[in-house]
Length: 256
Image (cartoon, rainbow, N blue to C red; front, side, top):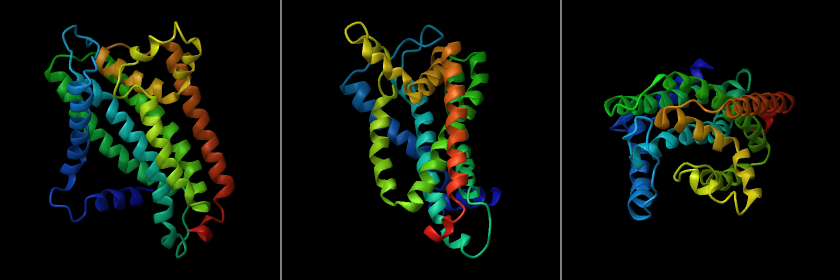
């Protein structure tokens, strides 16, 4: 597992002149595009930060974007990791889940770099509190949730290669189904006229994204009900995904 993570990290930017700098350039470039479109042209208004003076759409957006990038990379990387390990699995035996977890560990390293940069920015602008200590808990829960989905999708993709393309389409829908580029207040304003719209918050990604914004931007802990929901969903999805992978992966090398 450690070897797969090391190979993933070494190969990720191999041959690149800027190397690991791309791990920051890519998310910052994405941030610049979204901040320009939604913050400048469409003028989405971020809420006021926890220190009472912060009112910055780019920081508000980046706080959610780092979490989404991690979720996206773990889920889609799981499918690529299992397929990529196929030739090696035909030569030597190793548990088929190891390349998936190794890929997730490599992605976790990149998340650490992005989160470190984000926390430094919050410290510089004076918007920091004890709630930052709960960020690793949120990341741990999201890791379980993402890996559970990754296990199930990786084995399905090994048997039916169309799954990869379907997941790509669904990821685009999921991105806009969570309050990443817009404040959740825009959705909650609709609850009075459309009470059924409350099912929007059943989406686990809504809870994770709002949880990260609460901890770093608003400087408050997520509600107890939200935390319990994330724990139950994360553990449940991980257990189901791991169980499904274990039951169906014994002859997976023949499919790769």
